[in-house]
Image (cartoon, rainbow, N blue to C red; front, side, top):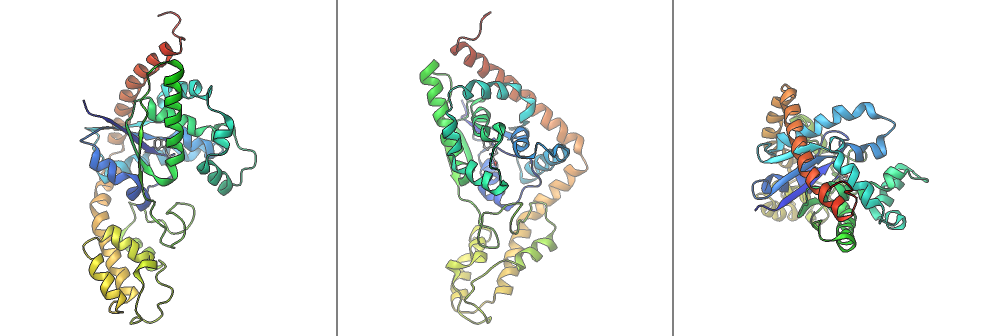
Length: 327
Ligand code: TRP
């Protein structure tokens, strides 16, 4: 029997290189080895965008198309929509009985996000989304969850919930392992790549835009003239070259240190490498953009499968909690 992976994203717009490095590439690499579930977490998106629901349907399709474009294969992986799997909502309620509010209040990712959004009195749904995320992960008894580093506190909570449940009611849930991926720095060198701050390069970005954005990236501040010796260690563009242009990075490191390549040339090489990687992704995405009915069929079939897997887990959960009154 294959082990199970679950991971996913909030539908808040197109996915970018940070998502690719943080999670998409491992999903694609592992999808044949694991039974893979990918959640489009629209309910979780509502925890911050409840007042702007018009955006949701469009964003859901953007994310689904990005998944298909990067090579997630719907014949082996199950892509589904969170709000359409009622078992996830039910599990969330049951788990919420034994999660202390202070554990959620002290969750570092919740704190950071709340500060970014300027919340002082958080909504109940937002404070509780890590509990709902535990339901996302456990409804299919996932063994492994590939996510970026910012998700580590949520994974820890999921593991605690699974342990707590099993010790209270009997062994039903699987305690998942986190597969934590490094976060990609933003091209401005400071924050992680994000939609709201800095310079995000989307997977669907046109080639000339990729070049334009790479040109604005921050390099070694000590380098003023082209032939000044560079310090690749502190250079954001070099970090990207190591990630996306692996074969060139060792030589680049040498010639940059000797001042034999200028930043402009280096950025052009990075943009070329990115565009080479993104071109087949863009091509596949263009196909799905004009075949949205296929995307819908994939989501609906995936959601049906998630519902039947969820129903099985929920039945076991209810039995263990002794709330299956009529057999
Ligand atoms: N919280 C994740 C994010 O913001 C999205 C997500 C929802 C998720 N449910 C999940 C990730 C379950 C992994 C597993 O990106």
